[in-house]
Length: 125
Image (cartoon, rainbow, N blue to C red; front, side, top):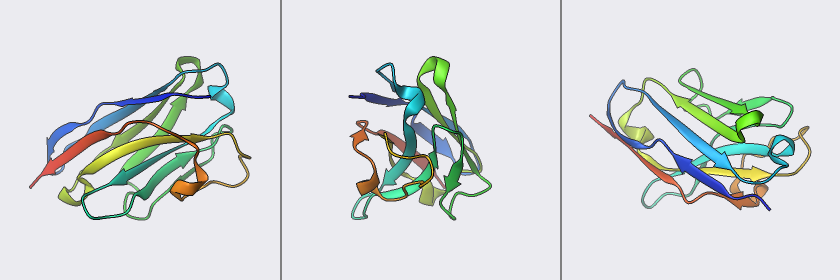
């Protein structure tokens, strides 16, 4: 079992930056693939970025070149650095994890079995 707790959300102006953190409990964090998703009102939860336990990454087209996912296994933490933020990035951001193979990077919510409670990111225009 892994418990995930996000932090770092907040209000930022267009063009600004935020760094989200997701702290994981458990001694097997280093063997988990991790992802970030987001959900805004009346929309389905959408994939943002993922990183496998081997360090491979994948991004949604909408955030490529602006967001960077990384992990620090010594701190049991995964990060999402968000730069050049836009109003359309406004959403609740969720951290997710799975203990599957690092060969396949899951990009749907069904591919993850552990979830955090979410952190609100609001980008003002």
